[in-house]
Image (cartoon, rainbow over all chains, first blue to last red; front, side, top):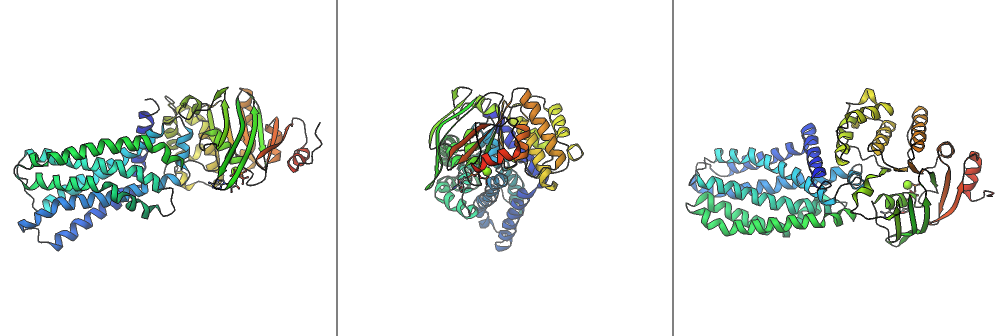
Amino acid sequence: MKHLLAPALAIARKDLYAEWKTKQTITTMLIFSGLVILTFSFAFDPSNQAVSALVPGMIWVITIFAGILGLNRSFTTEKQHDHLHGMMVAPVDPSGIYIGKFLANLVFVLVVQVVSIPLLFLLFDFQVPAYSSIFYFLLIIFLGTFGFIAVGTLLAALASHAKSSEMLLPILLFPLVTPVIIAAVQATRLVLTEQEGAAAALSWMQLMGAYDVIFFAAGFLLFEYVLEV
Amino acid sequence: MIETKALTKTIGEKMILRGVNLKVNKGEAVAVLGTNGAGKSTWLKIVAGLLKPSSGEIFLKGQPRKKDDFEQQKVLGYLGHQSFLYDAFSPVENLKFFARLYHISSPDTRINKLIEDVGLAYFKHEPVRSFSRGMIQRLAIARAILHKPDILLLDEPHTGLDQQAVSLFNRLLLDLKAEGVTIIMVTHDFQQISTVCDRAVVLRKGRIAEDELIRGRPVSWIHSLYEGEAATS
Ligand SMILES: Nc1ncnc2c1ncn2[C@@H]1O[C@H](COP(=O)(O)OP(=O)(O)OP(=O)(O)O)[C@@H](O)[C@H]1O
Ligand SMILES: [Mg+2]
């Protein structure tokens, strides 16, 4: 444990602190999500009730693209001066590097969501069907994002070995994240638009939960082999 | 202290190491010589745990090297071709990060002393991005010895250092050696070898071709050892 969680927190903290100093990744991610919201709010009339059906999809469009922006940088910045080797010569469990990177990426995307989702709701004048659905909505956002970042962190590390890693990552991600994204969009749509949505979304949430556990475990166990390539 | 037995490494089609047998005792300072591309860095990386050997055995303090034995990792200090330092961070922030990785509790005094030792006290809050090559090398040295390792693996540590830094660094190495730290140094700088090291090995064609004690030998003799023409006794 000593070689797992303590270094993981140190690495996550290092990434967040570096981001705090440079603000490079988070700025790009926020600008991107702002652009998406802006484009959609001009393309569709926000006052039209039917348009609110688009909101669940937009939430996940923002999450995926902003997430990929962050994931791509997550390991390419560590390549500059072979920083991963710096971590590997230290008494650090490779899985600890995975957890640290995962946590930092998760925080980046959650920050983008915290800013962009309320903005989206305001602009589209979105009404939630019941207050209890807010809780389920937040849970779904978390479950979906968790799974996406769990896979994304592992694949970003893998892709970073290639020359054109920016291109490789989305290609690797596409087949693997499709299940969790479908589940997330469906579940989000159900709880946001239907009165009894939470019950209907339950099986999607279970699917996301299982996906999260499986892929987090996969990242945790496989990361040392990814580092070795 | 460190021993590699019949160590080989093949990358792709290329056999870089063809059975390296080398034993380094505690407190020794050994120079590893060889032409560019001889496989010196590769050997060092394998010992440091950054690369897997294709075959052969590695022993550290008599124990076979295991990759999930973090206590073994802890006694090693590795300085590679790359600095491992983060451009956006200052020297203090960089060393604090590595102190956390090595579980050093209350590292502040140690960090400040090291930064002073390598002569970067004026720049300790400047981002590394603005540093010159020699300044980065100085900080990379501080990083490698931060956790007081028993074994130092140094890959061309003198690169980019100015005269003053070279003598400071040699002084530091000799002090560490006196404390019983084992030093393995890959280098092309024969002058520094004769100051710091007791023994030199030459890597040629993926094997240890020469292995000699060099204390008291002139630099020219080390040179001929490197060329394979030394009269050994
Ligand atoms: N990742 C790699 N893939 C293919 N070949 C490699 C790789 N790393 C090293 N080599 C080859 O292995 C050989 C030894 O490399 P190494 O870096 O160990 O040499 P070196 O002795 O440290 O040289 P130098 O004095 O220039 O630092 C070289 O011929 C190099 O081309
Ligand atoms: Mg080298």
